[in-house]
Image (cartoon, rainbow, N blue to C red; front, side, top):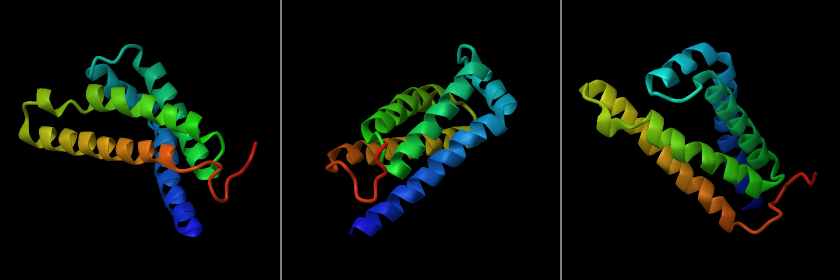
Length: 129
């Protein structure tokens, strides 16, 4: 079971790391979208949330400071879900469907990440820093 848990951590971490690096790779485009959603200081917000995803993803992957990583991810997911994917405010049916899918995906990630708090630490195959 330890190996299955490690594989799950790797899969989740790759997803989070990809998202975090994407914030920097597409900083301009994501900042424009954030500005449209009325996020204050959008380019700073995009960079900060990208950093949160990267640090949270590394924490999950390595099992190092997992509570800190989980807190970063929760602090990322809650406001982003409600500010950026507020499907209940979208009029266009196609856009509404996309925002709803992203909102629900974030809620699923939030539930999964919160469950990591119940796993005794140190996690199997964790790096101690």
